[in-house]
Length: 411
Image (cartoon, rainbow, N blue to C red; front, side, top):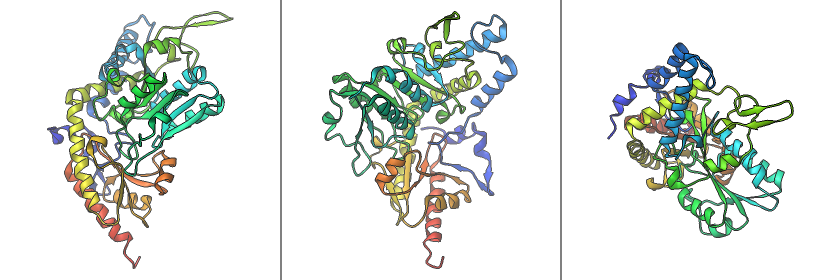
């Protein structure tokens, strides 16, 4: 059991009030709050060893380089990568996916090839592949959903077939909370010679993720969704694949030797990190990994199972409120999206905000999924290691009050 009250003291923002009410932050799928240790790591960088990394011979540059590369090692260990050379710093998971789409895919995807996605993908794991498919005259195929928001694998052997070049799938849906069987799908892709990308932006922060066990070719991570700063993320890719890929961006740092006529590329991972990197936020992401590792990802996952199950039971008991995604907590992350016919999610979210409750409203960058569900948008509550059941109780009271207000026939 986590000591939630002790954990909450590590997050300064959780002590503030909103409209005279204690802040209840339930928008963790969008971004998470930051503990003191992460905040202090940024201040420490800028106050004590701010300098550019690599090649500098002075003390500050060597200290900055050491902390920068230590953070890379921490991320590698966190997901059980064999080598830190497989970790490429990016701005976020979206940029990591675009890196693969604009390098590996441009070389390997050919006319008539097929790219397999799921019907629940975030725009970041959909729009880049739409462009690749158009550029290469390839075909996009989608794994459909069951009525309760799980992947329908009934015809999976027809979907992942000999024409499949890439299977690119979200690990945990940011809209439905569904935990997808990425290990099973990776194995199916391997049988037909296809490559695999896993969008792990919503899984790495919330549960143990082992790239050697899942065995993807690529896996993407977003730092700000795992207690780290914004503007930093990472691409994991198998080292031999990275060695064969052309650089995404070209310029300083990623080169080995340059003449007026040509250039050769640096070794991994710098080959894919052109220009001055986001040093401070990489250090901050390393601090976030330290914080999560000290608590333990199994414990964090168990806490989220407990609190999400508690919230889901309470939401299901509210008349006039539809919820989406599986009820089985072994297949659901800490996300609950819901909708009330006749009450727009933005109105519901605004009402809750006045009670100090921060939730997300909208299509959550899954517009095709919303159309499939037959709704313009949903309200989403998403939980993390610092949320409590008492906060869920306030949410439920707020939802009940809001629905009573908006459904009052006199209004």
